[in-house]
Image 1: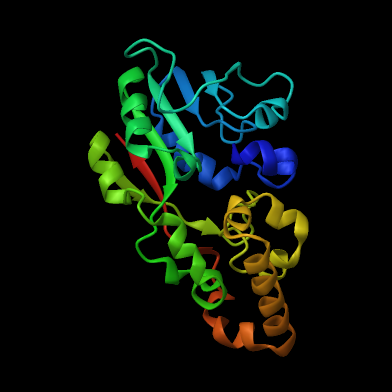
Image 2: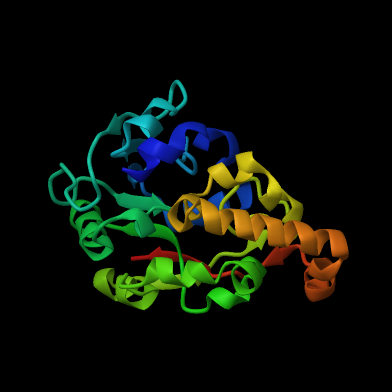
Length: 241
């Protein structure tokens, strides 16, 4: 599994971003029992509810902090729970790794009365400068995968946009849209699965190209309209069913 290889330092850069968490937790409504599917190290798990986590990677499970929710080794497509066992099932930045996202979402729908999923709409990847100007290979990562609309229809979900604050604490792929120098840092990139998926040669080319454009001022010239924004719309979405 991918995260058994790349997940050893995940807890260092992938932390809960309070402003994104507020939107996710609001979508949970008055749920008391929560299943967190693809829970990783426990980011975004609410502390005021009864949470059960599901995480297939032993490396990720080992990084969950002391006192965090109990975790079950299982996959989204085969959840070991009875029908309607939870008030809500949530999933954060994980469906793109599931072998069968539709099956996983339907399993969440089966075991819970409500579903909340933080994910990404890849229909317009060029809205993010890192993809548009440096990483066209990103589009190929979604080839053959169900679209956001297909995922939403599978569980009857509404779709909400999620803005990324300029100083986002969670080091997700899009987090540093106004802090481009961060993408030059090895530790930052290791917390994002995209780089492992595109491979080291592509990663090296992107880093070299970005470093050169930052030094020459070309990046600033291309993206001057971003510098005064407090938050950006880059395709992150919340599915709520």
